[in-house]
Image 1 (cartoon, rainbow, N blue to C red):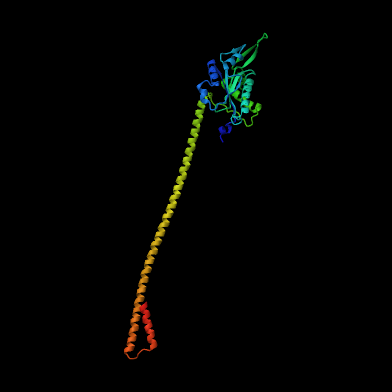
Image 2: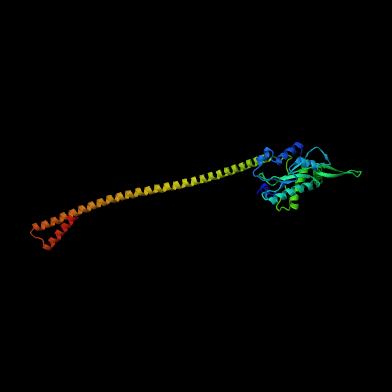
Length: 329
């Protein structure tokens, strides 16, 4: 079994990205199924599970009242993918557990006060992903004792990466986030059999749209099906060649047996013909001998009669019977 097969359905993942206000507006329309993409992905008529509200712009505005923001991003959009083989996406209890834990994990990871909206779509094919929208808030203390609320999209991500890897670049931030989510699945949710994610070997972007991901999966399935068909065709061809060779061997054996049988039949016919010819000759010879005996017997009788010696009645009867018997034969 390959490592990919071993991990299938047993790994969770988190992807987060800072987005602008146009993106936030698009995602609000998508969550409300007011865009074409949302309509295309729908495979069942079931409402999403929602934390907070679907009105993302209004929720963000309320979340940021009295808060001073570092940077100009609208917020962080996080995709939280739960292990498909360890949780039942069709079960509402599991769905609620996933939504609750996505919010709890992101809040904990980003300082305790970050998520202002989240949802788990249930009308799409997959039901193990939570879309979360957050802007981490924290208390900032001035030296003079003043305290203000601030918000930052990267403050806590950088702190986790720095603490774990000694650096806070994006790659390190992503690795620290994945490790923390695995620990949450294992320790907080206690999912038996959950496995840690593999480290990315490159820094290329791995987040793609569901349609693109679905197309890749379809192509992969097509490739696997084609490979299986090629293998099956090769096995079938080998079996056919083996059967053909076996049939040819059987045909040669049958041909040899037929030739031997014809030869035996020819020999038997020749022997029968020779026997019949010999029998005919033997019968002809017997007939000739019988005819000669009859002639000799008549001659003897005639001689005896002419000589005056005569023939006794008993002997005469015997000779007559012998002559009659010879004529009947």
